[in-house]
Image (tube, rainbow, N blue to C red; front, side):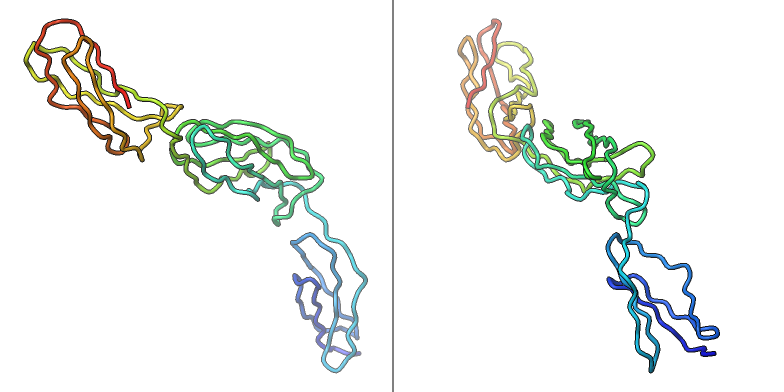
Amino acid sequence: NSSASVTLTSSPAGISQTVAAVNGVATFTNLVLNTVGTYSLTASSSGLTSATSNYFAVIAGPPARLAFSKQPVGTKAGSTMSSVVVNIQDAGGNTVTSSNASVTLTSSPTGISTTVSAVNGVATFTGLVLNTAGTYTLTASSGGLTSATSNSFSITPGAATQLKFTAQPVGTTAGSTMSSVVVTVEDANGNTVTSSSASITLTSSPSGISKTVSASSGVATFTGLVLNTAGAYTLTAAS
């Protein structure tokens, strides 16, 4: 007729519950383990020899949510990013290895939208490219599951490859100072290469202007431009 207190613990950890025996019997209810694995239970009570159960398995519950197990890593615009991995998980955060659900990955701002099928509960995204410099996040979604949003990451401009007039020349009268002309150093995808301080030379055709300035944060501004001869002109920027 013992009413001794009996403690039940799991190995690995997850359960620890104490109840008082009734007529020498301790009944444990509402036991929950949230992590997939193989477990045993040990019952102990002061002054008594403990007992260890048979091993038993805890398997994943039904798919409930998505989680990034490999976050995106920033790179240069136009370059392929490292792979991004999304797991299909149950409510306890266990990977549901039986799932082959379709998972869609989209970026904010826009630029990436791709869908793959999970293999053993894991969706791996490769070949991801963003062409516009900026700060992004990725969102993974799948029908009926709670979506996941990644950490933010940066896409930086690629190598300088081209020049672009971002403030075109405006005609004026001969001998008058023209409005400023702005030339931007860009990568192959049209992003301003803000790290560039390249020297840029502006010349006119027909001749009349030849001026060189250094870009600041990838932008060269030409001021004080004067043409003394009336006519139709174009300007060429070179570096």
